[in-house]
Image (cartoon, rainbow, N blue to C red):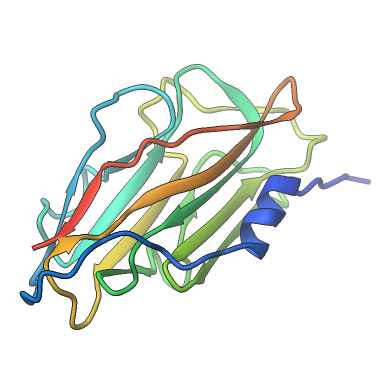
Length: 185
């Protein structure tokens, strides 16, 4: 019998989704979103998807990229944004997140939105062989944001507030995800 372990941090992420913060109102109606990648090119980070329309646009697709040369069984992350400026949108079909590393059956693939928060839990049974995350340039998960109706120009307050990773050697370790700047223009 396969044993499936849901990370305590992941469960907590989904149970404690909070409204996004930050961002300020300028009173000038926004027409598009502009994303600037974080300055780091290593470690966990959110980067503009190379296949998405160039920023600025009304729909921004971001890739969560891992550090190079790691293996593991699960990743959790909690992303927040000011819902008055931007809102989480479906990446494909009816999912707020698409993932690539875990091809085993059954994978754990949960993404939930509450207000400005998006909680993601990705994983596989701990009895499965750990997955290689590659050289750090292949996305682990993809998320998307749209300009909120009636948004004013200003900072959207995008942040990665919590994260966890179950590496090949275990146990679950906290991770820091570098997020770039998301602005309504």
